[in-house]
Length: 158
Image (cartoon, rainbow, N blue to C red; front, side):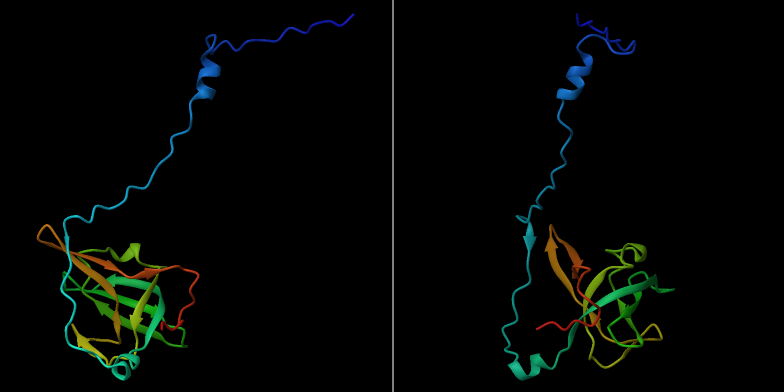
């Protein structure tokens, strides 16, 4: 003869609540797609740049090792970058309105690295970070071009 072993009920749960809780699907967050209907893009340059001139620009992936606001400037951020060489590269960029320094550290960006140094606020800026600029509802928008962190510092773009 097989005895039936009684089971104990939880004192905290009312009858049927446990099953109802399990039946509720977990909340799934969906990423909203941006609305570009109000975006205005600058017209393309009509002047032709020949291939030889363009090919002289050295576009590289750079790792942002440090980033700080430039004192006495509301716009400038000072970047310390790993460009795949043995020395650190400094680039100043006027994107502080769009980004806080701490959110950029550790990211991989794209820069032109063979421009002549240009003094900005007394600091030599050794290149240019690439950004995408647009206008939306009369206000300028800017996105720093950041790429997958699996791309190594110094990788050349073609």
